[in-house]
Length: 203
Image: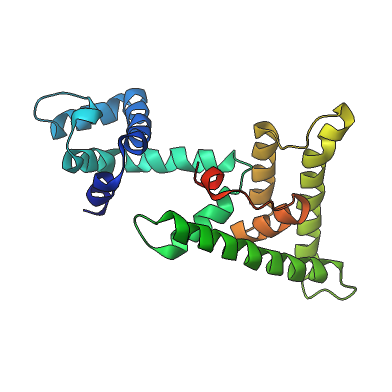
């Protein structure tokens, strides 16, 4: 029911972006395609012409694959997506007004800045509260992230983390058993947090 309501509130550009992902999942999975045929009475696979109830039914079939798709997108991004997902998951609204989102974004960056100061102070303390093994894990991940971010300096290019580097860092974080929050604090200790215009953030 919730998805049907959300789809009813989206404009065609937003809805079509969502449907395009669902289409690609269906086309790459013949088994799923057979299940979709059972949902559709007329046998048409054009999601754009379906009502929101049927789209919701189709989504329930591909939900697992959709989660995998979203997960892979998160893994390979170096934007502030982690900050944005924290805002959205805590707010609990299906659809959020832009001015409210802008205020939450501003507050999130202030909170992050405060947490970063506390985290860096603890890391650089002579007697850190973090246990030695964990501190070692943080330093390993931090050193690798610094190399990935700053190695473009040798070629006179803008600093960035490529998708290959991001994949390696993600694997490393899993092996070190870093939580999302720990990764976020280490990442933004090295990569500056820049306040972006809210239109760019939403895009």
